Amino acid sequence: MTSIDRFVADFAAHLRVGRRRRTAIVEEVRDHLVDAAEARARRFGEPRDRAEDAAVAAFGSPAVIARRFNAAAGARAMRRAPFVGVLAGAGVVVGFLGAAAPQPHTTHQATAAMQVTFFVGVLAFQVAIVAGVCGAARAAAVWQRSASSAVDRAFVRRCMTVSMLALWIGVLGVTTNFVLHARRSADANGIALAAGAVAMICVATAGLLALVRLDVNPDDDDVTTPTDGEWSALLRAGDSVMRVVNRHPMVSCAAATIAATTWAMFQAEAPSVTAALPWGVGEAVTVVAAFVLLGPTLGLRETRG
Amino acid sequence: MRGQQLKGHLDTMVMAVLEQGPAHGYAIIESLRSLSGGLFDLPEGTIYPVLHRLEDAGLLTSSQEVVGNRSRRVYRLAPAGRRSLARGRTTWRTFSAAVTAIVGLNPA
Image (tube, rainbow over all chains, first blue to last red; front, side, top):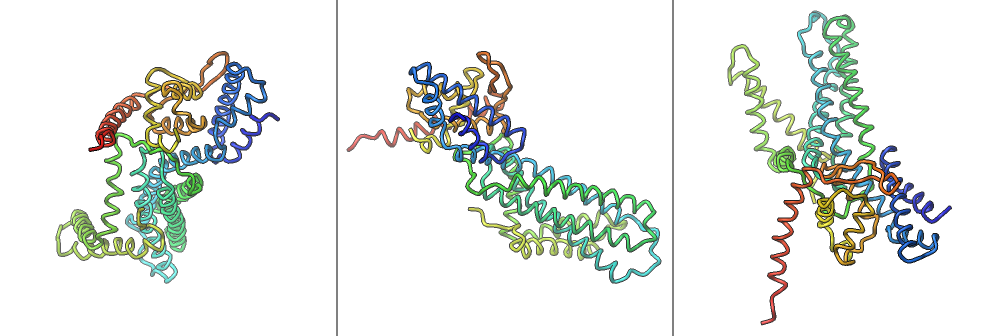
């Protein structure tokens, strides 16, 4: 085994990227070392083994170089995160369409088990949405950057993990609730809910698998300054909003109340502020309070360094 | 010159080299070394994560091509890379003019 072979094996052992990319990177590094060794042998008339040793020494530490590739892999995973969030949101909407559509069978009394499963499911969906929005906002903020910091990766990973696990729980809760309503299982709502549940389970599983690439060593930060893309300022808007909500929960509550009340008015057959306001206040306060109170525990709120 | 001193400038320098024409990683390192008169003698492996990052960011493109009877990954500057390089040049000129104005002061 030559010194180039040993170096390449050591380098490959430190790489944590996808299989196809690993093959391409390792080949590229090997080609570089072969070129460099040949150039040295030609230029200085060195024997082949000494030229290879010198080429390996000039390349740098295999662990350090591999860590920089790993940081780039983390940045790519960050770029995928918003799409996972959007898919998860779409799954939740499909599921809710099934659950919230007019039910033809409302004559039987809901049991305690039905109420608990429905409550757990809906609560879990709300947590999934809030966590998903937090993670997607941060991921979008750094989407066009050519590298992401370990702090950002860890935050997005935490948010997406909470979101995907909550999605699983939500699917389990609402589906169980639906199964308990056995008589509804064959109607159109059941088909919509089943499609939504399958979509949500697939998305949650895909999301958790995608998070594996975000599980990179905190030391894997790239030492060069990340390059911003042309739309970076626009993409940072979501993350900026989340930070404002974090700092000013009362103002955010008021804004969310106005938004929720307006939405409720447009939904009503006879729009009335008096009728819509209590619902709007309830929704807004619940969501923002959940974010402010549960945020630190779930890791959805953090102080940026 | 140490890698830390080049921090933040390597991306722009790599794009400036590729503005002259497509090149593979080893050729880019050689260009950086020769254009800087041997001053930028970085660990050679440093260049590859930078190239991959810039490609992921859409600033470079690459393709597998035969160079000197060998298959090599050759990098090119993408249109977005040209715009980013123009911005990097402006930033560098402003920064270096300001540093020169301060550091270049003669003792009173």
